[in-house]
Length: 222
Image 1 (spheres, rainbow, N blue to C red):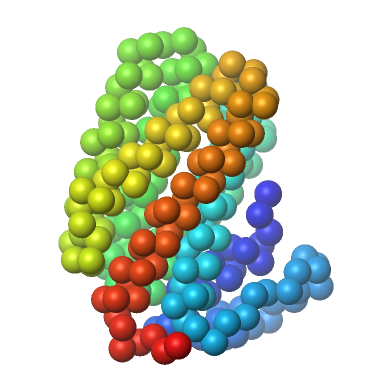
Image 2 (image 1 turned 90 degrees about the vertical axis):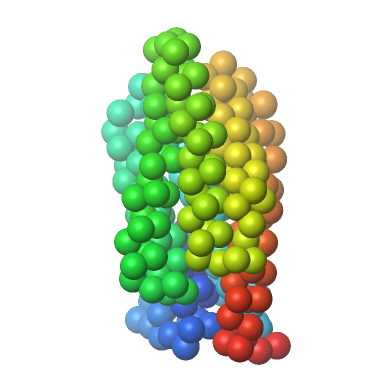
C-alpha cells in the first residue's frame, strides 16, 4: 500500500507550480516514519508529472485492494480500502482544483466517484454471477469515458476528448481484467495484470501533465 507521504506529495506537487510550494504543502510532516527521501527536482513540470503518477497509481492499488476484499467477502477490509480509495479521490479532486479552481474541483469529485461506483457494480455482478449487472456496469463505464473525456477537454483544449476517452477506457477495461482474475482465484494472472494496469496509469498521468504544462507554460520554469 502506498504511504501517506505519497498521497501528500501527489497533491503538493500539483499545487507547487501555482505558487503554493511543495515545502509549504508538506510543512509539519515528518519523514522519519516512512524512512523515505522525497524526490527533488528544480522542474515544476517534473514535480507535476510525479505527483499525478503517484495519485493515479495509488488510485489503482486501492481500487484493486477494495475489489479483492469484496470478492473474498472480507467486509471490514473492503470498507477500510473503500474509505482510503475515497480519500484518494478527494486528493485527486483537490489537485484538479489547485490547477483549475474550486468550481472544477467540486465538479470533478462526483464525476470521478461515479466510475468507482460502476466498478463496484461490476464487482457485485461478478460476485453474484449476475451477467446482466456486469454488462450494465461495463456499458456504464464505457459511457463514462466519454463524459470524462468531455470534462477534461472543456478544461484543457490540449486534451482531445477522444484521446482522453480512449485512455480512460483502457484503464477501466484493464481494471475489469484484474477483477476477473481476482474472482477466478488466479493469483499469478491477478498480479501480472495489475502490473500492466499500473503501467497504463502512466499513460494517463503523463499526457495530462504535459497538457497542463502547455496550457500554463508561463507558470513553469526549467
